[in-house]
Image (cartoon, rainbow, N blue to C red; front, side):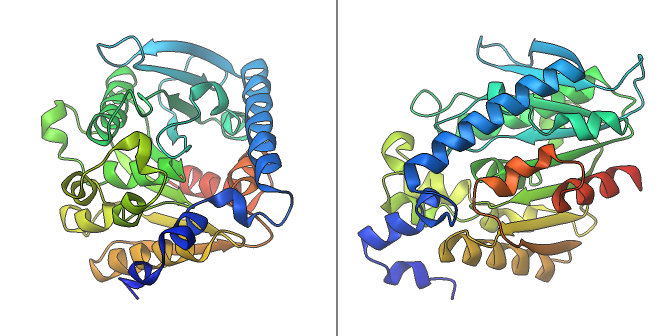
Length: 292
């Protein structure tokens, strides 16, 4: 099972790692266009209803900025959700990533979304480091938070998984990470090397192995926070395989992991629906945050 992707030809592998090809709702170009439109409008709506602090520097370069969506009043003791966007490490930004903030802020939580240097400007090592830096920065900004919770979609789920393997002693602060929700992620980068996705990333096998969460599970403590692995019903077989395999590896390592297949969704609306209070993953995140 683990090496089954190696039996796929390049054309089939590229098909498997093209999420837009698998939507049950619309064709491959329309579903991407709809996703960008939906998340952009959702972010605009979140900014209209939430108290915001935009374009806060978390690092030295001009591109290293984060946006905060904050609950009413001036509290500092709130749960903080960090959302890491997808886009195969080469598309999207924080400008389309605040769409899920409204339900969380209405329940007293805060949301942070951030920009990283998408490829080809940024390479995988830099992107992983930037995500870690942004989380350290928001911990320093709100040291009295009641817990940091991580959520990532697609490439963002990969980046959250890498964050769970962080040696925080290098960052002079240890975020109180209490939960993580990884949605339709990629946890083994080796198959990506054989596809168009690597054209911009230009990863070597060494870089891909070093930045594959499935290779880093041993760096996670068995006491690591609860981790939810979610996958859309209409994700490709390879995305399902990756999610199941990573989930099994976490369980074998003693991590408190659970697995959710979200029925009736594809790779895109599985995350878009986080703008809805009653959506299964929104409720899962709220329960995770509010039960602590």
